[in-house]
Length: 363
Ligand code: AHG
Ligand code: MN
Ligand code: MN
Image: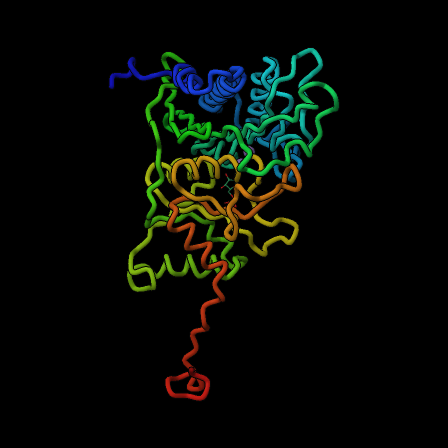
C-alpha cells in the first residue's frame, strides 16, 4: 500500500470506536495525546547533543525514587508526558517512574475517566550512546469517586492488576519511531511519518511467533539467578548438544522496550527474573509501568508474560514502584520457564560410583 493510503492513528482509533457507539471518546483522545507526547520525545531524542539532550539531569547527582540516576531526557520526557496529557479532561491522575507520588490533575482542568501510568524513557542508560530507547504507557480506569471530586486521588488507586488495563502501548525511538498499541483487540504498530508528523498504521495484528531460538538476559547476573532460570539458560547455551537439541542466539540491548519490539516482530524470550542480588529488590523492572503494559501487549499478540511463576496480568500490585521478576515473549518458551519453576529441581548430575548404575543409591 502506498504511504499516503495507510490509515493514520486517528483514523484507526475512530474506526475502532465505532464498535462502541456509547463510548465517550475520552480514551481515543487520551491515546492521541500520548501519541503527541511520544512525537515530542522522539524529536528531543533525535536532536541529541545538538540540543544539549545528553547527560545527567542538573549536571548529575539527581536520583529518582528508585535510587537511579536521572538523565536530562528522563526528566524532559516526563515533563512532556505531563504537559501533553493533563489538560484535556481525559484523565484523573498520572503516575510515572520519575515521580515519587502520583500527580492529580490540577484544579483548573476537568477530570476524566482514566489514570495514566508511564515510564517516560525506558533504557535511558542507552541515550548517550545513541542506542534505541522508548516510552511505555498503561491506561487504567479511574475510580468514580475521584473523577467526581468526592475524594482525592491516592497511590492505591493505581494498584490495579494488569488484567484491568484498558489500553497499553509503547513508542520506540530507533532508526524509525514506532508506536505499538493495544486497546484489548490485538496489537497494532504505527510508524511515524517524519514529513507529516503522523503515525501511520504499518503493522496490523502483530503476533509473536510461538517458538523461538533467541533469548535475552543480562548474563552478568548469572551468579544471582534462581535454579529454574539457570537451568533454562544452561539448556539454551548447550544448544544442539543439550536437552533442547537446537542452537540458540542471544541478544541484550538493555532497553526493554527495544527488546519487546524485536520479540514482537520475530519472536524470542526476555528475562529479567527475580534474583538474589539485592534482597530489597525482587526483580529489576517495575510492575505498573514496565511489566504490565508489555504483558498486555504480549498476551494480546499471542505471546505470554509472567513473573516466571505466575501470569503477570494476575498479580495484585502492592505499591506504586513495585519491582517484579519479568519473563515474556514466545508462548512456548515462557510456558517452559514457568514449568521449570514448578518442577522439582533437576536431579544432580553426579558420576560418583555411589550413584552409578546398579549402585546402592540408584533407583
Ligand atoms: P529505565 O531506563 O526506565 O530505568 O529502564 C531500564 C531497564 C530496561 O529497559 C532494561 O531492560 C534494563 O533496565 C537493563 O538493565 P541492566 O542495566 O541491568 O542490563
Ligand atoms: Mn524502564
Ligand atoms: Mn525510564
